[in-house]
Amino acid sequence: MADQPLTSRGAATYRRILDVATREFAEHGIAGARVERIVAAARTNKAQLYAYFGSKEGLFDAIFFGSLDRIVDVVPIDATDLADWAVRLYDEYLRRPDLIRLATWARLERRPAGHLVENHDLHHDTKLRAIADAQAAGLVRPGDPFDVMALVISMSMAWSPVSNVYAATAEEPAELHERRRALLHESVRRAMAAG
Image (cartoon, rainbow, N blue to C red; front, top):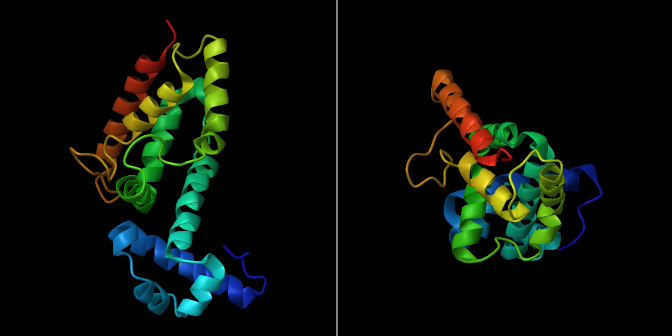
């Protein structure tokens, strides 16, 4: 993938491509996304897109790995309060359901089993160390830190776009979200409590 553009105009085009492509991939997946739709909506051309990202797959990677980084930045883990972390993840899924859909497409089209990303240690290392430290301090139940993290994330996604029961939206009544947050918080707190 090429470096990001240096000019303000190039940076604006680059950002438009990312924004439009995020919606396109979230809606249609990797195979179903169309470069023609992306460049038309981003008001650019294929040559520019390929210069920045190399290929449609390179564009998806930039968006997908950017979404993983965003979750870490926007919802940093606090392993001393995994229940609060789960609630903050729930809220982020409400704000950005497209990010969950991108992960779902990556799972369906690229890695149907095993870790979602090849270099998973790079994306989870901080979280796993935080959980291991909280376990060592007696704040979190024993168990493989990866499994603890996976369980908390799964609980936070109970009402996300990947739920096989119900997908919540930000437009639902605030009271409904508050009830879910309270249930999620208490459930994670109990499930992850040491001893």
